[in-house]
Length: 492
Image (cartoon, rainbow, N blue to C red; front, side):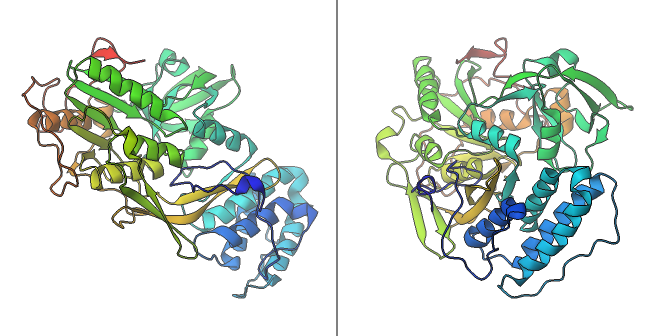
């Protein structure tokens, strides 16, 4: 194993330790023998066989690889009944690889010149990853890998239109419109994206839709949306621009409630959290909302550092179980616990993933803080990125992550203490019932779950509500923390 692979800390959920380099060692029966024309696929296959948290079936992976390559052909309108699909057996020998290699060579010899050998390769590796049906095992072609690296390092800039999207399966929807070309063009929260450059988003993954919207700066992209309350679809031609993905928003709402929205956990984010808390102390906030809606995770150590601000030191907040069953506990540092604790609630939703989920679970379970919103995505495992040798990367689940008290949230998610939905109709109308519910909970003083590990301090006074309470329909006036007319102060 290369030195860059020898990193002691593991990656959590979509948490990513970007140490690239494939494992090497003695050849095992299931490992593919070297074939230069198939080298990236071989490397990916061996990495999965060697490292995936549960021993995978060779037949499952290779069938996925073959069907992934066939899918590339299908996307180009190619249906060839003369291609011979491989047959598989249940052994761990190299025979299955030989069958795949023969079938893939036949396919590539006939169509690589037409669809591109790289595209066939990418399709095969992606098919292997998808065959495991594990949201933390993902393939990143070269351009996507560069974006992923920048995202984890908190330096994500790309050619885009300036929107955050809500991952509603089959219905990618605009969640927030940033300053940029999308806002200037008239795109609005609640708009469902039904086509990009004339290609329907039906059947595409959320990542596929997002990546199709991104592209070279200055080059326009046509976005077709279905807007709530509008009978016909609307088309927008939007020039792409350099976009900086948001990492942290911080504000003071109504003069008394501190608000921090963290979209990911890049390295060194703890310092920005400290700065926000310090300014809130100076401005005498009496409670805090920590929002991890749409948070997709990040660096493992960054998550522990942020948790150490709100969970007592020495507490085990999560444990990794590797393929052999070995346990690696993660504990928080007691030296950085916040100096002036205040009542705090956590906002989470269906788009809270991996590291965001583990943060919400630890805050709920070990911190004793109430979680408000919707059940999280249930996409949490320890993942590691492997280089497949051509500039692309394969992120593989190498361990199971359980909470400090042994709760497994993968495919389960974090259940909120108070469930509050956020319908698209509210999003389009400019309402945020989840945020309103959080403020109501803080003002009532009832902010601790029934089984609190650390009961929180309660408000010593009853401030006037910062927003109207949620109506019977679950709708309330939207607080926009980044709009100065609504938030008392925006923290930079």
